[in-house]
Image 1: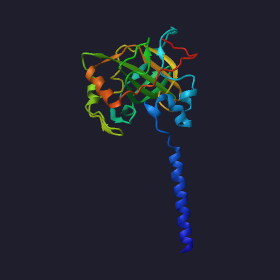
Image 2: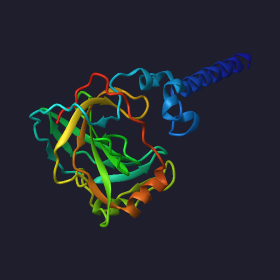
Image 3: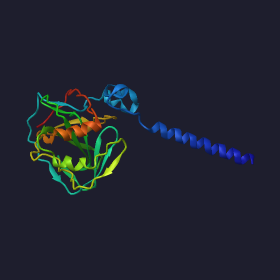
Length: 250
């Protein structure tokens, strides 16, 4: 009996240690206001130190000295539908089935998801837009490329946003199935000329080495649509970061 009790206590102690270990592995909460705001990210968790010490951080104001280059057109392969629309408390995110990819700089990048920021994070020639969408891609070596598209207010509604708003998850940690046909690159403008630069994730852990592709042409959405997104997400844009020695190409 005594040996059994000792065994039970040992097992319980191990379980407790494992539980504490798992808890410690969870990164700290972060946000856009108060103590969790962007200026404090680096102090919230050691995994977030790049948010302060990084030299190639995003977003940027695309202006000034921009290098003229013969950039290759991006090839889009658009074969898979959106599956779910989720609210993670930081942004509204659309997930896709596998099958959407781009050929960028002679590499294939698969589309993982797209998410929204209100107002825009990047700026173009000093202009801030009411909303920006990021289409996050990954190559076979797990390198990231993000296509950023700006939204401007217009009279007409945006067809893609209309489809998404039918299934919008209004509550944190809510995820809804998308019943309408929304494919990976439906949301992009017809003109796909772009700027490109090296940057980072705009959320913790602010990992660098991300290829940014910012389309020059915004897409349009109605005032009501933009307000619907803002009402759910609030202000979720990281402030502009220093360009430092980076080149921006067009």
